[in-house]
Every structure is written in structure tokens, then in C-alpha cells.
Picture (cartoon, rainbow, N blue to C red):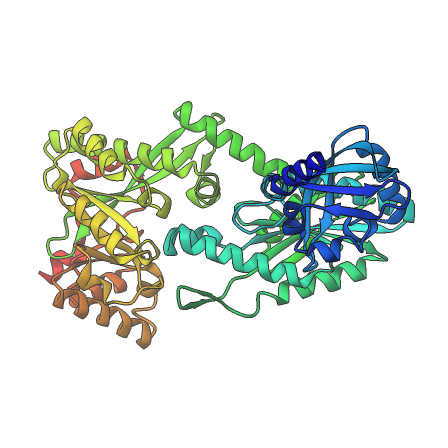
Length: 559
């Protein structure tokens, strides 16, 4: 009796759950307090139960597990009294208890460990920002889906979705707002597909939807249109409504290939073709798209080499003082002269440079060389010149922009008062405090700041009072209308009046006729540039123009 009491005392006080179970019928004979607490039962309830009641498996599986537990430890799910699951590690010994074959089970709670393992597994297979399947899980599911569809003789569609102009949203509203948008897009996509379809995020703003059990391409078209319709409702970012569109490229198994790699590649090709057509639509893959993709890749490869092989050159378009008629500065404009002598204009390669990030080294090259060329012209006696250099949104977002600017000035020896940096209005749409801080840091170097393409962006005129701007450039689209459209003339007059009130200098770009130049002189616009005076010129030709003393006759006549 003393031995039995001691045994019961040890069992009851044990921290691990201990269970005595009949091997024959799997009935629970007895459970200790730790076991009862683990599953939420009272001792009276436990003795009326069997393993079939507490192990979350079918009867046949439980019978097999009992045999295995007697040989080795097993991880098994148990039912809690409230219906939830408890993960436990079970080990057992066979004993004789009250003259019957009994299994003494030790129940070790591993719920936290299992949940942690599941969490790690989820993180390994899902995108951390959106919770969607990541590329690894996508490829695994695609492999399974293609094998399954092959057996059923059905088709499978892969839709690669990319947000239109997402880079502009990131550059203007900031990356945190971009992340919120990606999460909102993921939520809309998840609820738009069937439970057995897959939505994944490849990275950036690229999403993939795998649609299985499709009978024909008409079904795919319907699904693609439904997905595009998800974007007709605006997204709300930081209290601001924003309309976003998307481009969808579609490849179809088995017509476009039977491997995951080829299907994704062709969907990606179709998506880029869709973007080239203006976006906000869908495109099925077609073989002729590969030609355009190859051309684009060739251009990107050549552009990367152009930086290293010094194929980039600067042209300069004169800026004219409309009071004196004399050249007062120039805008640095990049050109690409390929090894075969062909001249590539910015419109053909700058968008690609922006997309690939090559605009960063290209922009730095432009700044350094423009400073160096201007210093050489000043040293030759062409005093008073200011050179204008454009900064893209990506350049402005660089953390080391101010340091790079100082280095370019120091390296060239150019006085900062002879350098003007041109920004577009879209650059000024981020957080106001951060923009002001960076603009002020740039102004402290002594350079001048200008707003390019004024009036075509998203900003209101009020930012001109808050930001340390020296100059605005009237966009060519307004200048073209000043002599034949009263509305165009009124817009330019309004810009001039507003700028002069704020003591800002105004430059009109895209001046192509004498009438336009006369209008600007009469309305006290300070400077102009355009083909009426001169197209952009190589440095040597621009210097020759300075040497010749060319002036704008309209201005001198007005004087």
C-alpha cells in the first residue's frame, strides 16, 4: 500500500502528462493532473474516454500509431476539450496494471514548438509584406498544377500582373505608402480567385495568379477582365484616394510551354508588351513579342556598356536673356552616340534607364561633366554662364545626393552660383518636411533650383511659397499656344504674374517662332530657350556660337 501511495504521489505531482491506457480496447484507465490540465478535462471525464476520443486522427490511424508509440516517440495532435488542437510528443512503455496489458503514456506538450515551426514554414513560403505565396511556393504549386492538368487534359493559365506607374507612386508618395498599396492590392486579388487557385507575389509590384481547371481561353479572358475591374475602385492611402491600373500578361499551359520557367517567362513577356501598349489591359503571349523583348534586352545591355565605353555625350541648348538678347546659360542634354556612329535620342533610352536604375550613374555622369564643361567655358572668358542639369525622381531620392553634388562642384572647380538643378513637380509630392530639408541642404551649397515643365505636374502653386525655388520653366506645351490660343496666352500670363509676385525668374522652353519670342519679351519673361534661337549643340558648336556673339534680335529691337 505504501508503494502504491508513493507511486500515485509521484504520478500526480509529475509536470508531464501521464496516462494509463488499456492496450486491448484503448480505454483510458487513469490520467494524472498534468494530463487533465493539458486537455481541459476533469479526472471523472477522462476515465470514461478512450484514445479514439482524444487523438485527432481516424480509428485505423490511431491503431497504427499506438503500435509505433510503443517503439518510438511520436508527434500527434490531441483534441482539447474546447475543440482546439494540442500538439504533443507521446512516448510509452508496456506494463501490467490490474492484471491487464496496459500502456503507460508520457504526454509532452509541444504546441508552442509546433506553432513556431509552422510560423517558420509559413515565412519560408510566403511573402513577408502581403502574406501571399512567394516565388518558391509558387513554383512548387505550379509544378503540381501542370502535372494535374496534364492528367485531366485541361489548360492552365498564368497571369502575371504588374501595377502601372508604381515607381511614380513610390517616388512621389514614398515607399511606406507603396507598401500599403501592395497590401491592399494583395487583399483584392485574394478574394477574387477560387480557393484552389494561387495568388503569389514575385517581388516589387509583380503578382502572379495561377488559374486551374480552365476549359478554354474565353474563360481566361473573363477572369482577366474581372481582375482588371478590381482596380476601378480607388485605393485609399493615408486618407488620400488614388486610382491605380494594372497590366496583365498571360501564358497558357500547355500551348506556351510545359515548364514553370518558360510559362513565367512568357507571361512576363506578354505583360511588358501590354505596358508598351499603354497598360490597363491584358495580353496573351505571342511569339512575335519575343523579338521586341530581345530588342529591349539588347538596348539595356548596350546602354550599360555605353557608360563604361564613354559613348554618352552632352549637348547644350542655349538659354537667352530676353532683356539683352545675349546667351546667359545653357541646359545640358544627354545624347548617346553608339559605336556605329548612330545618335540615340533621350526618348529612346531614358525611360529604360529610369526603369532599370541606370539613371543613377547616368545622372551623376551628366552632372560631373556639365560642371567640368562649364568651368572650362568660364575660364575661356565666357562669363555669366549658368548651366542647367535635370534631376530625375530617382536621383533626388538618393541619400548621398548632396554629397555627390558637392563632390562634382569641388572636382570641377565650378562656383555653385553657375549651376542650376531642374526638378519636376512630381518630385515635390513626397512628404513636405523631408523635401524642404533636402532642398535647403542643396541650396546651402550655393546652387540654384528650378522647377521644370511647370504646370504639367500634380502639385498646387502653393508649394512655390514653401520651397526654396529660384526659377520656374514654362512647359513647351503652353508656349506653343500663346500666339494662336487665347487660353494658352492667359495661362502663360498667369504664370508670369504669379512668378514675378514671388520674385521668381521665368524661363520659357520650346520657343519655335519669332511671334512666340516677341510675346514673351512683351510680357517680361526673363529667359527663353528653343529651336527659334538654336537647337541643342555639341560642346564645340556651342562654344563657337558663344565666340560668334550671336544674339536674339527680337530682344534687342524691343530694347
